[in-house]
Length: 142
Image (cartoon, rainbow, N blue to C red):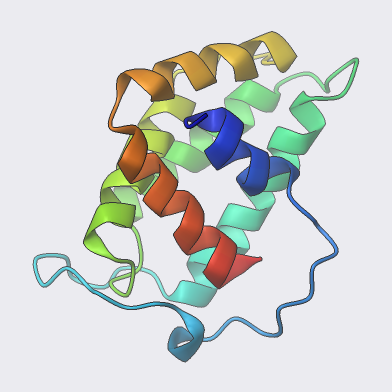
């Protein structure tokens, strides 16, 4: 099943202890989109992504911390404003936009139910693009 269950399952609840070595621009799969100017490095992107992933993990707790949705929305909005790294493949870039736009809809005190709603929102979009984004961040950032 696609959407947040698959994309988020690995993105947000994947093996936090996985050691894939340091993230470098050369470790990313590349099929850059020539239309995007590089605004963030792969390292900066992964650092921010992992911070978001930590917040999503906290949303799944029985009593999530207050304001998680607000913090996630702020990070998603900032990510959308700066854009993905130029090294990100075109399909993954579309998935990035889809996922970040969906995250931008979270309520202030988001919790587990909101993750399920987010999954439904993502299923309305192009699931294959969300999956491509998932593959990119798994291979590049985790």
